[in-house]
Image 1 (cartoon, rainbow, N blue to C red):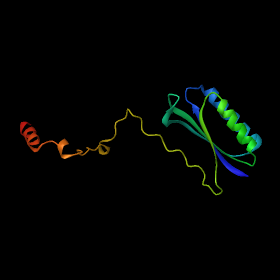
Image 2 (cartoon, helix red, strand yellow):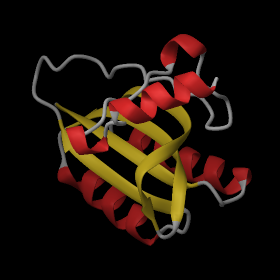
Image 3 (tube, rainbow, N blue to C red):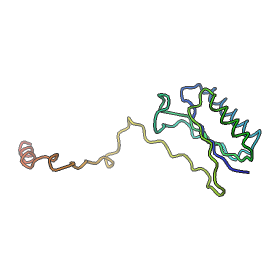
Image 4 (cartoon, rainbow, N blue to C red):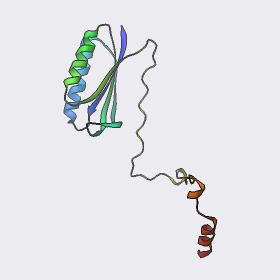
Length: 143
């Protein structure tokens, strides 16, 4: 039996009930014809680029073992025509592949300012961008 990964990106604008239905349908298809090794819900995450004007997606990873291509064909066909699926990818893993890593924590929200020690000044790109010595000295004398 060969080991496969199915990465499923669901539309964040779809109702929660619809997304749960898609996940349960995929899981039942896999369990009916293969051995489900793992099902990982990575939650709502920001995508690297927008798909259909959507910046977020609900990520799910399924790992399963199967011999036949019938299941792969059925999954491919079903996910292509299912509303609410933004993208999916089925990948055959090499024997001895490590388990999937835990998803990285999402970055801090944009409205929270970084701590003072994290802020740094950026060096001027060239000497032309740097303040002139006379201007700096004049500003200090005015203070």
